[in-house]
Length: 129
Image 1: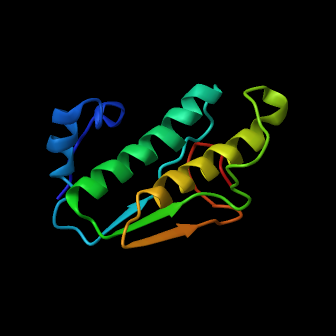
Image 2: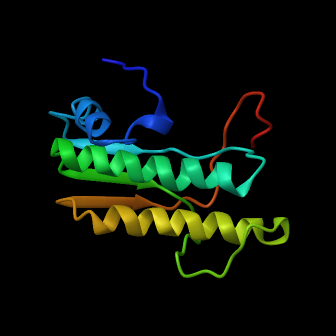
């Protein structure tokens, strides 16, 4: 069953959390592969790679999903020094992905899996490998 949702508003208030958590109910695992591709700003990247991942964790936990799987990146580390400057953008990406991992781990699912591939190949017009 497929549902169309406004990702930015999935956890905007308690009513939205209750409504959207119902979409996760009766599932055994959440597999989160969210990631911003080619975003123009650090804020846009943070919205997807931290905010939406966090919200997926919130909804999964509210719905009683026992297993959360998260795809991040090789080198993810919440302790990295990074800022929003373009010169350190790669470090910022790894830091935010590491922060997302820590956020999901802190939710204490019965089982958490984190996958850190070095490179994901993709086809299409996005210019990916």
